[in-house]
Amino acid sequence: MGFRLSKIYTRQGDAGDTGLGDGERVRKSDTRVAAMGDVDELNAQIGLLVSLLTPESPHAGVLRDVQHRLFDLGGELSLPGESLIKSESVNSLEAHIDHLNEALPPLENFILPGGDEVTSQTHIARTVCRRAERTMVSLAENEDMNAKGLKYVNRLSDYLFVLARTLAAEGGVGEILWRHS
Image (cartoon, rainbow, N blue to C red; front, side, top):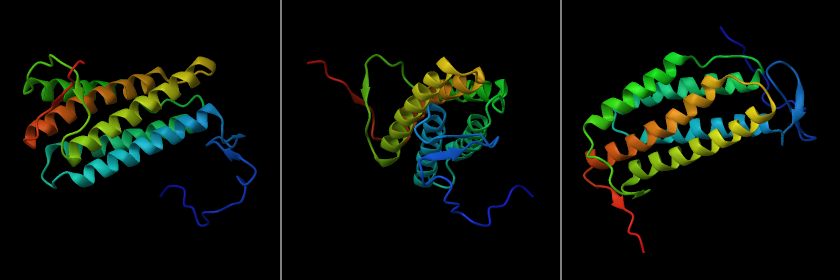
């Protein structure tokens, strides 16, 4: 059995710092902590997305796997120098993107985020994913980190975009095309 928290509050962060997985104390405003928070928020947004899918949706299993990988990524960010995201995870997302894209018409215009609730939530998760990626890029500019983690979130935002298109088609709501003024 893994580490068990018997007491949730410790009061150690009351002055604005927090502990990383290796015991180092850093400011809560640190880029690493911001990246961890963005990845955690992304995981929560994907959890909400899964809850909006029907139990028999083939996408739920993929998204649950993504949640596990995002938890790994959070652990990786919490433990500087750790590499938990592997090439196989990136390759898996690429295979899912290719599979979903086969059934979609070519994209000939920009689309607006929206549609029904599940499609809209997928777009929200995608934008949070992009933010997490930007924060991780900022971190990588100053500290060494696993390049596969960056590649994973980049590919994940692509997957979420293609998934939003797929869900719009499956739900019969279609895509909202951008009208250039």
